[in-house]
Length: 357
Image 1: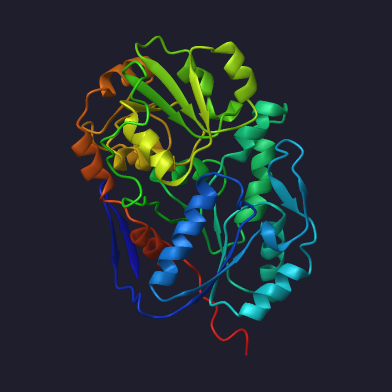
Image 2: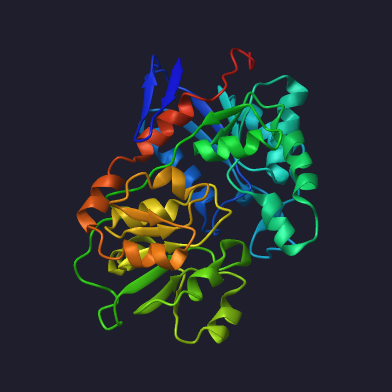
């Protein structure tokens, strides 16, 4: 079984996807959170079930939780041991994926090690960088924890080549591949604009409104038209005061979110710490080109200058992206699917044979 990653597609060779599997996914990120981890786990699980696999998702909804000190809206599970182990044993999975490094992830990791079970982990969020933005703790200290967490796994799944390189440089080297996708039925071209009365061009930001997303870099751009921000987060109240000319519409979901994407002339992705950026694919599927820095995530997703512009000068990138073809963006996004995402996950999951007998 081999996995070949090319610039435009993933080719899976010698893999029997008809072999039915039971898969446990453990995640500390779940509803009502709105982020890439939740969307990826949920969409991948749906695609796995459509491929006739059985999926168990262990998430905070199954446990007693308390607010995270730095992010009160994020709930941390506290009654995790020995419940995590009992729930896993009751399901008897063939494969175990630990998607996050929080309390549930730790409990699942320790359970697997205590039982001699193979398991796969996922690296999706640069928490050491996020922590450093709030507390003066060196990233190297935080990465010691992530080395401890991930290195016993059979494979640490990443979504991009640049993230794999980034982790290798920080002592996490056993990386594997788990791609990302987009729902092109939901995210599509909408011809009636939800922002018809807003002066154009419309520059969109979609995502969490927090310090680690570098939203100020977007709001400080000296560009014509209107800046529209879709999302919520701890920095929103202050930014509303500091930038009264920007339009903050709050958190949006489903078709309404897709209509906002479609209404934009450009999606500006100012983050320098994201590991992928699902909003990039969602915008492209809605025909909206992307402007971003040439950093991990955007450099892996935007591989065609017909659909986006990457530049260390974000203002220059934004102005250059406006006017790119909506149909080119849509066609590019059609290459990505959650089915392919599920298949790339299957090809990298460790399997436990006959351990539940």
